[in-house]
Amino acid sequence: MKLTSHDIIRKPVVTEKSMADMADKKYTFIVEKSANKFQIKKAVEEVFGVKVDEVKTANIMGKPKRVGVHFGKRADYKKAIIKLTAESKTIEFFEGI
Image (cartoon, rainbow, N blue to C red):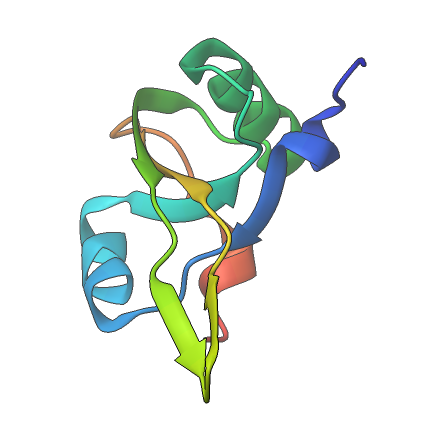
């Protein structure tokens, strides 16, 4: 299956830590599990029109959950922290948050 740039970037992560990292031009996204760092870098540059300096990824395992007698687990996902180059413009998507 061929992934497009919009398929690779699922959604942004909006937490206190990720909002604080935006001052250093670091943005956090949930990405497709099968995507590698090169694909993530290309997708961010294509979708947002910025220059990416560094990509760090982490595979996050879902937490086990329980409702009454039923046990289950949240879905596993992959998180990418994107650091932009110093001369790159910021991602406007986050400005209003």
